[in-house]
Length: 436
Image 1 (cartoon, rainbow, N blue to C red):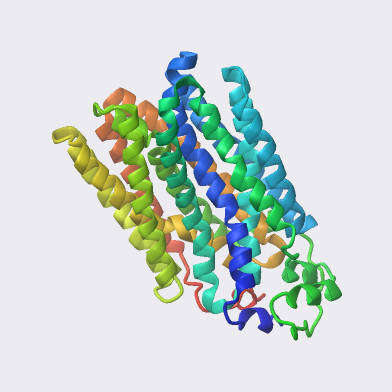
Image 2: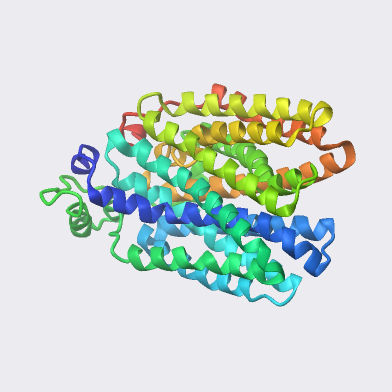
C-alpha cells in the first residue's frame, strides 16, 4: 500500500524531515544538560538547598511526564503536523521566560512548562520520521533523533563552559541561546507535510496521495483504510501488552540511569576536587565522544538489528558503572572516571539511547503510534525522576560508589527485559510489523 514510501531511495526530503524532526531531541539534550551547568551558578546566587537543586534539575523532566502521554494521544487524534508546529512555539515561549525569571519559584515553574513542550515534541518527531522513511533506511533515520540528543548536550556543555566566566548573569544567556535553534526549526517545519499514513487512517485519501507525492511524484495509495479510533487502552490489549511492557521497563531503566549521569555528572566531577569550569569542560568532552556511539548505531542498526544493539548497550552500561563504583572507592582519579563515563555514554548511545526512538514506531500501528511514543516518554521520565531522587538519597547516605552500584542494577534490569521481551523489527514495513 505504501510501496512508494517503503521502497524509495534515500532522498533530500527524507533528510530534511529527519533533521527538522530531530530538532526536538537536540533541544531536549540542550535544555536537560544546560541546567546541570547553570546550577553551578544558580546554587550560590539563590542560596539553594540540596532539595531545591534536585527539584530544579528534575522540573523539566516532570513536565515531560505530562507532555508525553497527553500530547502523544492528541497527535494520533488531530494529526502529526498539528502538534509538530505548536509544541515548538510553546518551547520558545517558556525558554524565554526561564531566562528572565526573577526568583527560584518562577524558574521552577517555567522549566516545568518547558518540559511539557519538550515532552510533546518527543512524542511526535520519531513518528513523523518513521512514517516517511524507506524500510531499508528507517533505523538509521530514526537513529539521528537519538544522536541529536547528544549533539544538543555537547552544545550545552560547550556553551556553558564559555559562558560561566560571565558570572551571575551567565545562566540567563545559557537559556536564551536555546531559543535560537528552536526558532529556526519552527520556521522550517512549516513546509513538512502531514503523514500520509495518518491521513489514510482517517479516510483522507486525496490528501494522503498529495503527501506521498512529496516523496515520489507518481505515488498513489491503491486501497482505502477503514478509520480506526485512537484509544490509549489499546496499548494494553493482548496484542500489544508485551510490547508495552518491554518499552516501559527498558525505557524506564535507561532514563533512570542516563539522566543521573547527564544531570549530576558535572557536580560529581566537581566533587572530585576540580573547578566548575573544569567540570563543565570534562562534561563537554564526554558528550562529544558519546556521539561515537550514535555513529555506530546509525551505521549498523539496519544490519545488526535493534535488539542486538540494545543488549550490547545495556551490557556496556552495567560494566562501566560497576568499574566506576570500584574506582570511586579505591582510586578516585578524575581521568579514569572521565574515561569510564565516556565508555558509558558511548554504550548507551549505540544501544537503548537510540532504540528508544525506534521500537515504539515499529511495534504499534498508525492509530496509536504517537500515543505509544508519548506513553513511553512519560514512563521514561518517571524513571528519570526515580533515578535522580533515589541516586541523591543513596549516594548521600552511603556514598557515590553505592550510588553507582544502584545505577548498575537498574541497567541490568534493562538488559534482562530486552533479552526476554525484545523483538527484532529491522527490514520490515510498518504495515508488515502490525498485521492483525
